[in-house]
Length: 156
Image 1: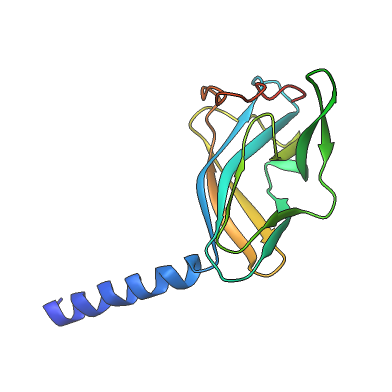
Image 2: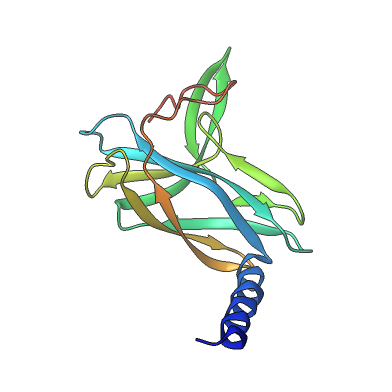
């Protein structure tokens, strides 16, 4: 392969990547389950809207679960949290980032089709109102500790 061909391929690759990432960037995705026998799990990530217009995460899907919903935790009384489905999706303002983390917004995986084993990966499609579908590979990391201030994923 000549230098010109190699250089052209490198430029084409660099030009193609921002076209995919010019709207939504998905950072640090991971999934986990409470145990190997768990019937549900959750996925977490940070979404960065790199476009100039507001968008909204409206759905997610994966073959790893029979049902997938966007969930959050709401305080019902004195620090007691209840997990609930997010109606209408998760807003993602132009230029902003949204952390989906334990004890907060997350992708709920219900009716797992197999165990979420440490080190495995699942493919997930995130559907945005304007950006459309983005397919991400989500590593399973059951050993990850909850972030400071999170409530340890209670309710999973």
